[in-house]
Image (cartoon, rainbow, N blue to C red):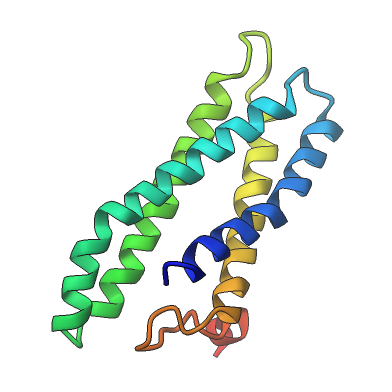
Length: 146
């Protein structure tokens, strides 16, 4: 898990960045890609820190409770994703100038978030089992469809 989780996060981030930067460039906004990347990197760090903060609790329940161990681990990841998404949007909007319309920042940010989540799901399926007990995310989109 020490190698698989950061690798999954890094690969999904690398998949999402080109589409977000392309969306930013196509919007024609006077917003630097560097600001978008900085907001994204700080959000990934913030989300990772949330997962690290919740990891001891998830580990305790994973090893002592067969009923809620996996579910608590998944909930901690969902909380980390929500926090990272909010940090990303807040950081990207705060780096935008007063004259820049919010949609020029929100659209590329939403593209990055959406593509990272879809890539993250498939990379979890490739790196499975990250959790030895197995979850509904182990099959990627195919696992969710069934």
